[in-house]
Length: 315
Image (tube, rainbow, N blue to C red; front, side, top):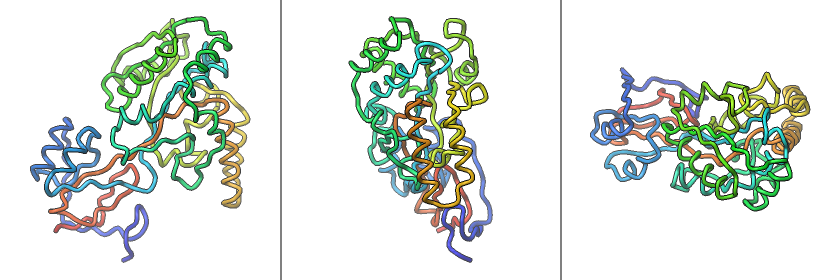
């Protein structure tokens, strides 16, 4: 009988029937909501938010306290130039998060600059290691690349042209790297092809890669153990294969901590080490709102990044 809050509390069905409708085209789905043909739209495209904000009878709703997504630039630690820590750390100096977020999301109400790897706004968020990534300095970045042995060799970037957030973010990165004086080999392809190619450990010139961009869940990024992109398990880890036994040792220890204070202390140490080793380069976080017909349904429950359908009532 208690009030529903996220996944907690009462899970009471409030309507007789829920019909799930697959609409492949985002614009068609948006129009269906505006026309009253559907009552609830789980993930409206960020581009359509200004239209939905003005639509009569439509309400936009943030889905939780923690932002639903964060973006990351993943570097391949196996091959030059990013097998050198200086070149990896130089990438922090090329990333102006505000520029990425303005391009990808646009509306500051829905995004947040975050100079950390643990999701900002979550209980374990901290500033450990953040000083390394808080400065934007392309000139210094190029100097660090040269110190790492970079001599104008092409850097292979996988560009997913068909993804509504990853595609634009990659374009911002490409421009920033070229303006800094780096030579790029941009490989344009669909996201499915990126997923296939990022698994290859071959050198870039033989079908491998140096950089790709992806996104992940703000909820999974809020804990250093379930935050798999924060791991550094070498060839057993995720694409990019960062390799640092110290990070893995601390992540294992975290699972056995006894108090909230111990967890915060260890989470800070893990983040600091992971930022120093550059497991990935973040470019900010954002919230994906849901949209529904407030003139037709009520008591919609918000859960970060997910749709839950209990509690919804007809008006």
